[in-house]
Image (cartoon, rainbow, N blue to C red; front, side, top):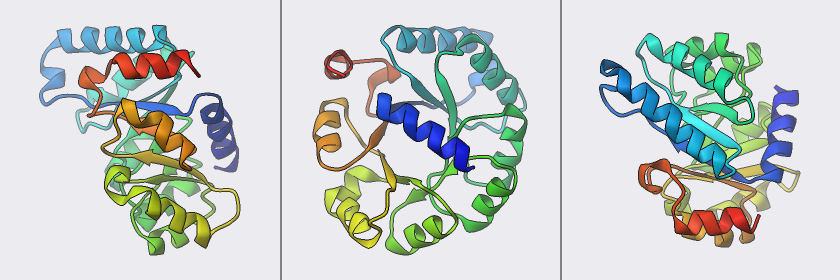
Length: 211
């Protein structure tokens, strides 16, 4: 896990943004949805996006979809969002992902992930879970929901643990706030539902151009 953490941190230092795409309900009922998703990822890649997370889905076809995305977009660092149960974790073990994320800290899931060398970045919303996460060896932490917890919470975590921890902010983040949040202490940010159709808006295009 240490190698995967270091590699992701290095990649996010180069471009501190993750775009999160969640599959709509009934996604696998229509074959056209797959083509639309692949086109969306291509557009994001063409705009220079380097990190994309796909939301986990219980459909058996989901694993094949992620494999196809990884094969077709080898210049994008593909990860998986919403790993919140052992079922989720077990389903991604065959995918050889560089990273995935959880919306919260659930110790038994992270212990199993570490055992299988699968990086599942924990979502943190309180100091107690943060303490446990760093005790497990996590050097990269997701603060969720960042828009509600605010910069004061980020600073509280930094004051508690002065050693190098890489902080990703996620939850309610808008593209117009990227520069401000990065300037106020976040090392990287994840943006999803606040980005209409998960495609670059005017503010994101400006940010990409200036990074």
